[in-house]
Length: 294
Image (cartoon, rainbow, N blue to C red; front, side, top):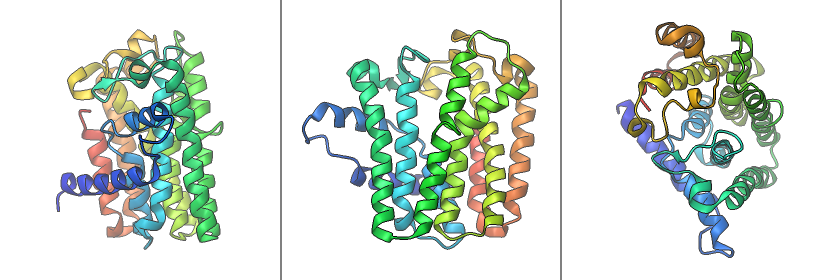
């Protein structure tokens, strides 16, 4: 099976599970559930949940046991995109080829839909923990919470917001990338490994690989913002320039930024290769992420 087919199959599995865990649109008040589902099912690549499930499989874990955590991770990621697109932050009108949530439902409902997705994610995970009564689930939930909150994605977003219009150095830029983007990828790797009972040493190694993948992924996003088209990306291009953001491209140019992506990806794959053939899918997925055009 080639990577494209396998990714599609795993994406479909995640979509099916997300549909199960999310409230239906027919429930009252319908608008909030429509808004939540509008963004969740807007055609995302499901990178983070697929990574969580892949790491879990590496250590003999079950997809069905890991599914609540994988889907919760996607809900958290989606809430962050809804809030990121708001006029107070990036002020974007399009995401994944269609109107952003606040353009479709209004700013008030978009804010509440983001809030709802975040809290529902923890409801889904905590229900799984209560049902299993297994410390592994609690540790996985903690890893995701750590990646999503003030020790991860949120603090990265804060530094990103307060840095608009400022010239940043590489250290500050890496801090933003590692937290705003990389922290949820770290959460995916750690949660997947913890759910399957991986050793602490394995979790630490995977965490290091995830950090490198996270930064490489964001640098590639910076590159695509100036080299891709709106049709390919499904969102406006040159948005970093519009918001006066420092990126790897503005600091180093496209060619040097591409070298950073390749080096970080090589280092990440070297770590993954230490786990042998059971990590083949994650290696292929890492290559896919750095070669993508969207």
